[in-house]
Image (tube, rainbow, N blue to C red; front, side, top):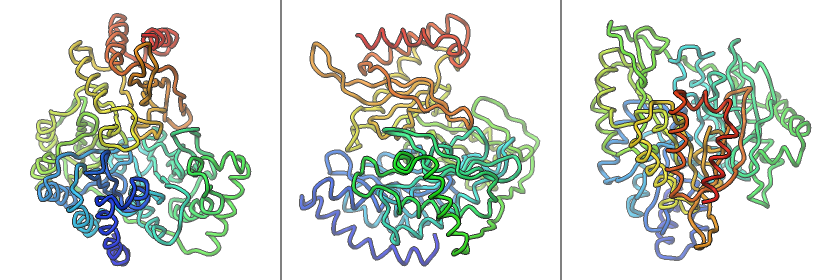
Length: 514
């Protein structure tokens, strides 16, 4: 983080400390404190006694220095729970109010500023997690994500946004970061340029983004960021929070009107700003050691003889002690670093074959199948607005499915959100769930509405709507029965679903009626 921003933000911590203490002394309501603390990347957890802190990590990149710092921070403050998020951040949970302000200052000085990590601000800028090392990528988008992340910090105190603004970069049409349906998304092209999408988003009344520009030069991305900021501030809804995200501009302005407004702001930015960039490329000079490694969790990089090792703790909940374990493992490995994925996992990249073998061994406690890489938000035991306990449900499902010993691929990755906020992006999942309450003869019961058929790939996007609700305790058995059907046909879910959508609907109806 640039020194001038740090000097600008540090004085704000005195007010943060005062209001945090006021909240704990019952002099501020939950809503009042949330509206303030979110701007510092911190929220009170359910019950108001403990707190969460969200670290900004542009593109999900965690260098060795940052990993070491996080490990030391967790040890110093006895952090009991950490969470990898779908916005490529790390959340630290169950924090004491008395520690929070000192922790935040330490985090900021270590370059992981949490300012704007929540609230009505530009959020963590995302990038494809293997950007710069992935075979077949169009080009490395991470340097542009980092530059954009730094640039957007200019608006934290200078501009009042109607709501949050999410910006991301994708290095291919796989679209892992959901660039085609974010507030502002850049999708790389084979010709070395970007297509630009605006005003998309998940959640209530989800919308695909509007393609606002094609063939954009990467050096010009900050002009598009400025145009999106100006468009949102000029036309965003400041009176109704439920309609204060950029996607609602598609309704108020119309598609053509939105594009016109954005392009006018873009033209103004080109005329009045000097925002061209030429970031340093990400260069790996490390050599092949001759050891070859393969397996489900190993990805060969485009750098010959180097590998990325995938690690997914269940539901993204990572033991804080794992940060120290990983740091001690990689600290002497040249160029090795971590990249957080948009699906709550991480890659340890730039490993030679011998190092990859060591990393594989150290991360055997993670997911071993596609299904076990399933995504879940933190859930209503911690989140103040959560309806369903997504982490509990995911744990129940994994336990039930493991007992069946299904082959990998029999069941897909699922996404579970505790509420309509879509923190687990259930609308783009092959099977997704959202916390709900279902009426029954015995009274209201905890349940989850189901989503099916989502897809994030550029050109094949499908944002699904929720369907019937299934009582939470019945969902593991629903998945087991689905797995048995597919296993009995000696196929995998992705192949089976192409011709069996009706059978899936029938199974959903069976469990929804229980």
